Length: 401
Image (cartoon, rainbow, N blue to C red; front, side):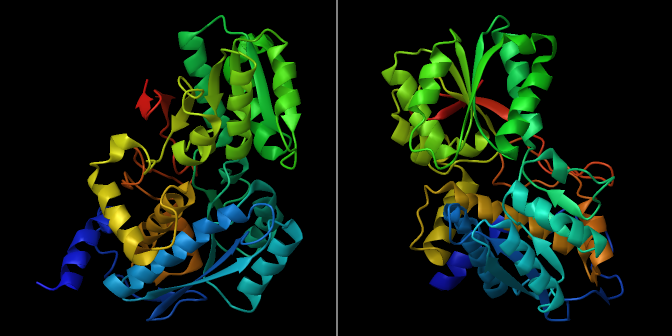
């Protein structure tokens, strides 16, 4: 057996779930193609911030490009068709993303749009794509606005919605600390405001236990003044509806202030390597979050077959990438979900059927997600990932609570 054969056998389990549970007869259906599809190719459009203030998230697109390169090389693409991902840089600028999407649709003639990042950018292109009936799939934005099939039937998110996440924290807090006194730090945009609204909704009649809130701008150099103000409220529970840098700064500042608050953080910031280590692992003991995807840096997954194979895949297809960067496994999971969807479409690759199948995912298991998570969608339910488990950091790893 050659070394390349051994590698192919080792990497094969990564996409086992994507090839399973397909409706009988799907691949045998008569060929039907929409724009961007031929017997040999499926052309996909994407816009991500490879430059600008959110450029770190461009790594998602690099991971997805590597996944499709692997898929094309090792598996011959999907049902014999190679994936051609055209990914453009928008600099996290709503005006630029509109320009990019128009170019992808009108000049490149892509089949659909995949994995645009950010609530304001997805909102900017959603009317155009829905008016033209072009699938706007698996957006990298947690807003509840992208799970609205009644008003925007061609747009679908992927990750747990921000509102659902915040309500999950509220439910956990009420069950375990019903008399909590709450303080909230939130980013002053749709992301932070939606989480704050979800927390208030989840608390219901106890929303008045929120003693203070402080907002911040992503360009703020520190969170020091906000944390001082929040501690002064007398709160014993702190919610950080923020991204990794601001979460790390806030945890460290709370420790400097001697504030022994019960801390909950946004699940998108729950990386040990990029958030808790800068915050100080000692300072982070007891921090809680909602988990939905495996963190490769977490020791609890050291012997997980999927994670072992993922590290091997990273060595071959992204050798210069930082495996502790959560964007890499996120991009992998996004791409693998899309692979499953396109296999389910079989030979009917019209835009209408691609959207129909996106709204017909049944018990799909993506191994990058936490154990117990199954993806189910319907024409009236566009929430792709709904499984969240509360986790607590013990100083070394996340443990379920």
